[in-house]
Image 1: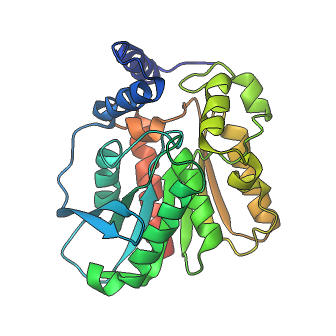
Image 2: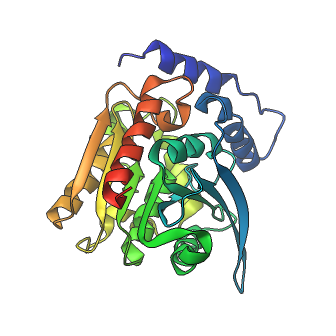
Image 3: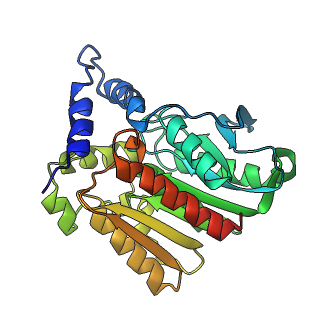
Length: 299
């Protein structure tokens, strides 16, 4: 495994984050993740950024809307952040989503779904489904085209995006950035990178345990009918333990006659999409996603 200098810079930064003063493991993990924002680069200006609270009968869901211009009837992507289902927020992904909005010229809508272990599966997924449906039903109010809506996410967010695409009709396409699709952790890349970098097999066993007691139902690769899934872009990283399950999911989608575009980024690690302030391929991945959704959504 060849660790590029930019990747090593990221790994060194991650290792330098100090949260030992926080005794609760989940709280410490969340705080550590929040401190990775500088790795995404500077906070780009966007035409407008709006925070909005969706009110449902039993809960509220916060969303953040990134508009790249004053143009109305733009297509939109509803985006779900990564963080092992138990961490991450609107803030952890603010910088890459600003970049994505600017690169794509498309409205990006981030969803602050409920986190495990306090809210186990399917609470977070239900938030993502309900928020996406709300966006579809309120497209005119939002100034977007309700017939051109994509979903996307990175890591656990990719898992959630696949879940949303499997539940809702009229999703134009989905973008899954190194998604967690297989809860068995038995693929060759899990053997190859059991000790990381960034995520480990021991850590992901804990992630799935915290997230759900029904790992088969929650993992997209076990979905028996993928025939209705939208066109899909799957990104994987060569040095990521999730690499092979992402590629296997792409294969299952193709078997179901779903149009799939894949790109594996050589010598990249899990999380690199968020580290575009340091890693060139992170910026490249944002540009690749922007290009894909422009083509699919007809921008």
